[in-house]
Amino acid sequence: MPPATADLCDAHPDAVKVCQTPFRSFGQVAAFHGPIRTLSVLDDNALVRQTLERPGQATVLVVNGGGSLKRALVGDNLARLAIDNGWAGIVVHGAVRDTAVINTMNVGVKALGTVPQRADRDAIGEIDIPTAFGGVIFTPGDWLYADEDGLIVSPHRLHD
Image (cartoon, rainbow, N blue to C red; front, side, top):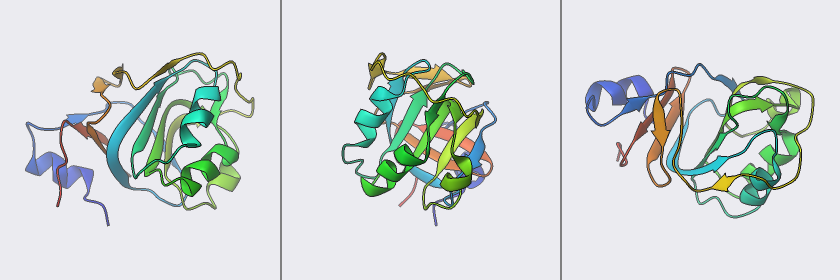
């Protein structure tokens, strides 16, 4: 079982940054953790697909969608790619769709909300650069811990 974010905050108060964005959980994995990979996109998920098609090596994909709820950046097909390619979880600062199916899958997805409209597919965005939301800078290689209480980020691994 992954360490609880509350316990990590108590044990490492100077090492963690707490994301102030209230995310909803989807999928059967409520808690996950791992090194961060980042994407910054707006209403376009082609780079999300391209990234999830590659081996995840137990990393967490953080997708900064600018908080847009206009188009879904992740659906059940991309969640399946995350499972098949060994990603630890997905955080979407934006919308997802196909949540009835995602909720039956062995995957952890955190997102702002849902929308049925699919995303554009123009491959516009930025890969593996620091990106920020919720008062936290998500830097590739830093560690993210997510559970029912929220998200925290640390520049290094916080557990054994």
